[in-house]
Image (tube, rainbow, N blue to C red; front, side, top):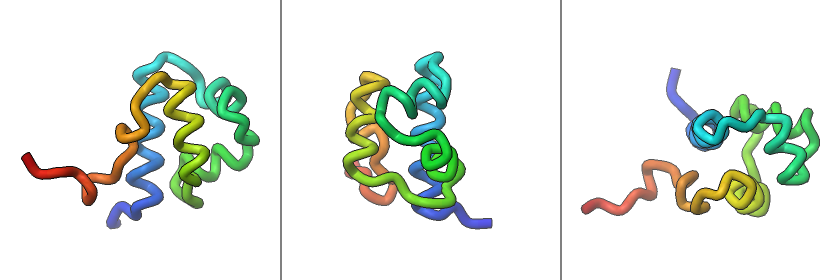
Length: 76
């Protein structure tokens, strides 16, 4: 099964949460995203909004570009 853009993004967010040592619940709370909404998005069922990604990046203390899909990566 191919990875959808929503799933790719969700995987990146989940990986950052795992590296941070925080729980998904604590990140959702700190980012102001309801738990049920966050769970749908982290499973790739629906997409994160740009504003949500900015808040999540701030909570996790990472650059928002951390969540940039591979298709948008700049070749070096």
